[in-house]
Amino acid sequence: MFSIDQILAITFTLFAVIDIVGSIPILVSLKEKLGHIDAGKATLASGFLMVLFLLVGEPFLRMLSVDVHSFAVAGSIVIFVIGLEMILGIEFFKAEKDAKAGSVVPIAFPLIAGSGTLTTIMSLKANFGEYNILAGIILNLLIVYIVLRCLNYIERLLGKAGLMVVRKFFGVILLAIAVKIFKSNINL
Image (cartoon, rainbow, N blue to C red; front, side, top):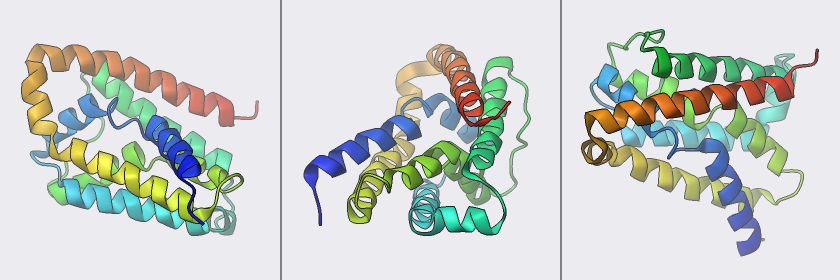
C-alpha cells in the first residue's frame, strides 16, 4: 500500500518539477499585480488539478482529442510568456480585478499544477502506486502552501534589488524550462 521509498521518490520528483522555490520571483511579481494571493485557494486549486489528473488525466485528454505532448507544448508557451514578462518587464497577463481568480490562473495553473506537473503525475502511474503518488502530491502541496503564505517575509528578506536580480535570473531559467518542455514534446 504505502511505501516510504516510493513516497520520497515521488515527492522529490514533483518538487523538482513544480519548482515552487524557483517560482518565488514570479509569485512576488504576480502578488504585486494582484495585490494579494490567496494561498489556500491557490493550493486547493492546484491540488484539485493534480488529483484530477492522477485519476482521469489521460482519458480526459483523449476525450478532447488532445495528446499529452500537445498539452505540454501549450503549457510551455504560457510559461515562456511569463518568463518574458519577468525579463523584459512587459505585462502580457493583465491583473485580474478579482485576486481570487488570479490565485487560480496563472498561479495554480500553469505555475504550480502546469503541464509539466500534470504530465509527470500521469507518468508516475507507470512506476508507482496511486496512494503513494497521492501522498507525494499532498506533501508538495504543503510546501506550496508554506511558500505562498511566506511570500511577504521572503519579499522583505530579499529587498527590491534582490527581487529584481532573482526575478531576471529566474525569468531566464523559466524560459529555458519552457523551451525544454516545448522541445521534448514537439515532433518536427
